Image 1 (spheres, helix red, strand yellow):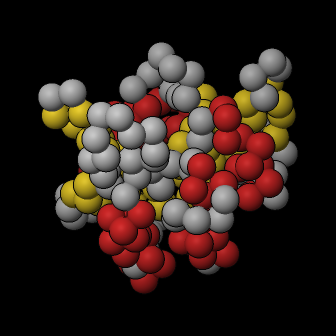
Image 2 (cartoon, rainbow, N blue to C red):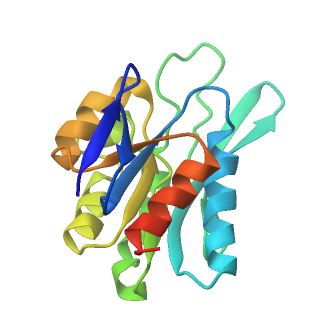
Length: 184
């Protein structure tokens, strides 16, 4: 595998065999969750075994609820806590995230062609959240795709040992990575 960095974004472009780990780096212009979800469902429609969790935001009055959706089964896991309007604490519900993690833990048994994690974010950067599930799938040589915001890129690069592709938030980049991954 050889990768080439594009300046100034630091986005890797694939020049030969694709790394089996990739992160989409949002640019703020694309609805990253809709992009990833459409990509996953199109692959499923083509007969690929794609498993994992995609993220949805549900507006509920003044609140914004975050939900993880099991790509294969459609099961929804609400992972937001209502902490009140004056709270400055993280609204992520660790218990609900742990409940959703079962989706990720069964992927190796399902012989998936691709595992999608909704995010590599602060919890994963600290070794919590879905970090253990990511590492388990990576060590089982199952291709992994996730979303990583710019502020977490250094932690992501450390977490993956620099072995992951960083893709722009464009459908053509996702399609190209997946084709290269599977020799197409």
